[in-house]
Image (cartoon, rainbow, N blue to C red; front, top):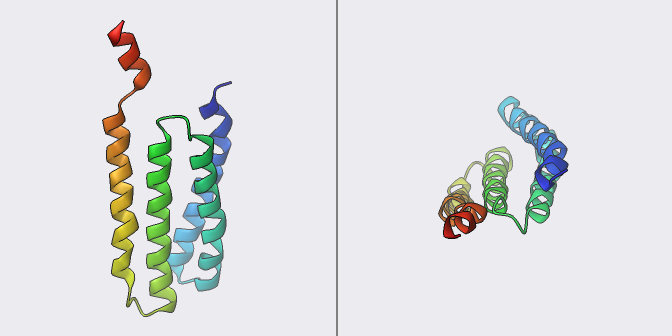
Amino acid sequence: MNLLDKIRKYESMHIVFWLIKDSCWMLGLKWLGAIMIFPTVTLALYLVYKTLKTRDVYINIAIFFWISANSFWMMMEFFNDNQYKNYATIPFALGFLFVALFYLSGDSSKKAENAS
């Protein structure tokens, strides 16, 4: 069983937490939405850790930044009158950077095959 198969259940659980968090945001459930940040970000970090030696780490870091930006924006809407929500552009931009790194890194196994 390869690494991606091993972490698939964590990816699925991560999506469930993310959807619950965003649903709480949509429904205005402030405290439940705020609480759901913790398991969502924790699983995002776990996925980054588990994919450190693979190219997928770039996508998982991008997802971490996306969730961080999304969570910050939600918290600003819930508890801070949206005053600082534009600071969410920083982790959103970092997410785009890591998506670009993912695509620029290419698949190293295919590069090695083509070189031989």
